[in-house]
Image (tube, rainbow, N blue to C red):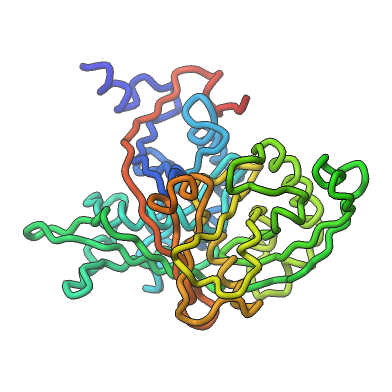
Length: 389
């Protein structure tokens, strides 16, 4: 038997472990490691109960896949959950748990875009039992998948092409998802920064407080202008990530402790926490956000200070909701949102487009691509749960 086959089959794993097989994708440069085989059954009647079970009983697998030596500090993953309360009721086609360096997120836009393509392309009924229920719209040349995330059901539209009697995703066109209810939770919140927590740029600016907004797009984000933090020229790459990391970590700690900002919005308790901080340029605060020719830059630090390579899909949902609440975005306007990576390429690759989708929902468009497939095994105790250096 070939060594590759032995590792893939799990023969080289420690006793009591099995090979974990994944499909690897990226959206705007942000990875999505999709677990397709080897993950144990999740107990619980609801998706949030399954999420709690994964956190309490199977977290070593998340650490194994997300952390070194198989992953890295900024790795991101998706665990497909074939059955949830929403799939049983007919409201969703499949469920998912998102995971990262700290734990399990409530929503992820870049991973939803990647999953849309993968779920159309897979023929494995063990992975996606309801695949045959996903219909191809011949006129629009797309398939729709109702994805049950911990925050609710996300509607994903996947552009497709027909090849004989089969349909596959089309990488040349954007996947779209329509978010769960997205809204501005609080605007113009003044955050007093204690002297001992002030970073150098804030001191140079002579400031002791920062003004921020808080918005929800399936997860809660602080949205803050770069100048509020004492920085300039983030778009041109003149600001180091370590300096932004320090400032956003302080803001996350200070705002995250204000629990009243995240409660009272009709959400499950498990969703009521601050997930990330997005630093935006000064264009974000101007009216007429709708020109696709000029993207709006955002640098997102989420979970345990992961840096999102993409423009952050759920963050775009939050930012569009915030812009609408402030009267900066009209109905029907579409906005290009850039990450540092897509901004360097003039938005040609990796940018997302956001727009209102009626009521309190937001439409986000972006492209995802396959990068490989892996079979991970555990041969030693040292690397069993992974580590971060």
